[in-house]
Image (cartoon, rainbow, N blue to C red; front, side, top):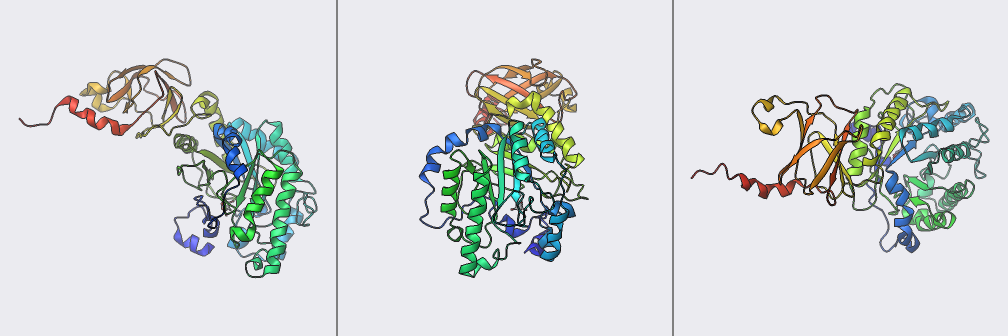
Length: 460
Ligand code: GLC
């Protein structure tokens, strides 16, 4: 399975196929199973903070962080379980690591954090009564989930728990597929662990399931699972990776708009769990663009960090998150509470988001004076940013960074922002706030009938 993923090459992030099966959010619900009425009825209200927040931090942290070969290392390298288990004794994250993560997320402008409470390796980061394979009885001697929850709340952020249904360590984790007695034990264990997580740590805002292998939703008793979740945490939101539709979809490593709520999860380098020598870092510009694209298409963005065994976050991640946070401090109006769907807009150097009457033009390649300005009036004066198909009357434009007004001209075809400086005023992208006299609207398709206004190109 992981070999196939490796051979495919395209799955460059090293996430094996088994883990990717559900990523597009297509619920694998059996025919006839209906979502809980409670869940449906309360969804809009439960999800409001999440929709406005737009940007979250994902944390992959577990025994695999000690090896530093990503979170699938147990399977991808075929480590004997008794050998791997020794890591539990030597896993010693430093006190205060969770506070470091939460403060970083706050500085980055992220509004929620989702931690791997148990990844596929089966090691539980909390004080569970259901297995000794946990952070309190092993090396750390501390409840890392409690530390996390307290740290996140101290920063005023929302708390999310990632939980892997698939479990390579539990003796019934694979045999449950064929052995009914093993299945009964393992499913009870799974429900029990989730119950603990949602009972012992106060209000939890997100439950982020992952990987249903090897059982069907019926075998997991997934509906009963979600019912328990909502009974314990009435305001929680759940994703779609326990085989049911949940409240939101979870496209992985791609921005993929959906009719329903969705959240792209993405890594900053190639892996989720710590990979010591991975140097394929995405730039801060790429991260800001992905965040913007998610908002433009109506989704959220969950950006991962993979701390090392001590809990330290790779410097490259810290630097990038701080750059993004710096950018959000002046450009947050274009992201938080913003959307984009009403616009069928594209640009070769721009993205677009909107909020009410305001259109935000995100310029990621600054189009300094083109040589064509020598002959084309269109590209004068100064540097010009042009947007085709703006269908709302523009009343004002300004740079979000400085508040400086921007001159403009508008007709049915194009909105031209003129007299701009030759250097980009902000980094990694510059946002121009355009105020319209009604809801902001851009649609390039509406330009086509306008071309005839010029009545050129027809031989008479
Ligand atoms: C996949 C992978 C897993 C990772 C997750 C993040 O399911 O199996 O390692 O935690 O995606 O979305």
